[in-house]
Image (cartoon, rainbow, N blue to C red; front, side):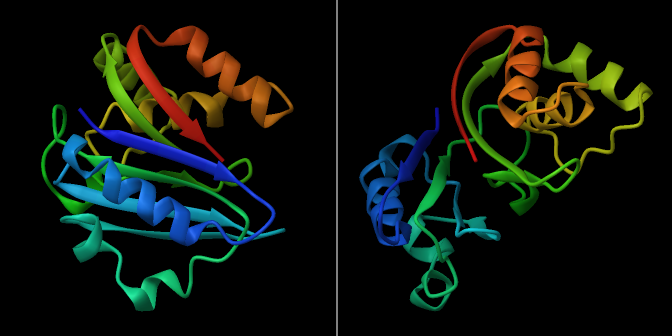
Length: 162
């Protein structure tokens, strides 16, 4: 069980995402993370612990932009290292960040196939499988890449992407 939030607004979203994660804290107390985006940059802060411990005021000052996503983690898969904290980010072929709650029942098989095709994983989380599927998609747009990835995964989940 985890909690995810995504917001697009006309003004800064860092505080609203932080507040949303605090309300969702009961869904995960292992780790917390926020990614925000301004016109051209992604800003990421994630770490183990409660929202208030993982994301301090000094971090909030760096989370700029009017859109963003957040995640609180309860470890049902993977271990409790900070490498498992979400959102996950990959910069190839362009910046993609994703937070996920759920269970991909075919994650192990997809992971094995992705590694055989050159993917390098930084965590044991099934969430990272989705990002690698997007990165290996031949589609042009980020939306089409996400659709391609989600057609390959099995299970029950919710996610937010930026």
